[in-house]
Amino acid sequence: MVHYVPVMLNCEGQTCMIIGGGLVAERKVDMLLAAGALVHIISPLISESLLQLVDSDQIEWTSREYRDGDLKGAFLVHAATDVPTVNEAIAAEARQLGVMVNVASSGESGNFINPAVMKRGRLTVAVSTSGAGPLAAVDICSRLEKQLGDEFEPYLEFLYTMRCAVKKEVSSVSVRRKLLRKIHEIDILQDIRRGSYTPWSPEQIQQWISHNQEE
Image 1 (spheres, helix red, strand yellow):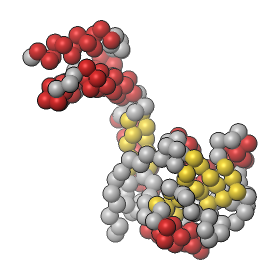
Image 2 (image 1 turned 120 degrees about the horizontal axis):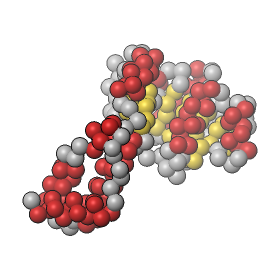
Image 3 (image 1 turned 60 degrees about the horizontal axis):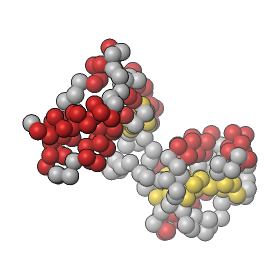
């Protein structure tokens, strides 16, 4: 069994290549565009939805088959053709270049896999079965979606706002650490669930920081 390292990857402004133009490629494109990546597809044909993204200048498209050398300059590659031997050739070039590659037809041929993902605003939960059962990962994600409700979106926005304010206003490292721990003691989640939560004003945030610095 392959042992993977869970990471959150910053692809913003990075060239990410997808070889293939079907449904698998569509899913990869959506994920990469949401992360701010520069997406380049190589495929003789692409789906209608991908063509719309090309026409609106959201992605680049090279209309031909993959060729050795196509991956130079790529930050990340998805081999998503329906021909396993082509996917293996893509993976081989990527490994030679030291580029991260995901192989749709054989996860272990690449050096990373995409987990099943659920999002709630700033909250991202990724589930992987390390190749044992991708559909099981999707099912687990669906169960988590039912448990982690919409309240986590305003809750995490609150935490982010408070964290930014503390880091900006408090110069002492030890005091800052204390305040960042105390933020999590504020029972905002229950207020959100009851429907009684109102976002804090800058004045309220400053008052909380001043009061808790003195404790």
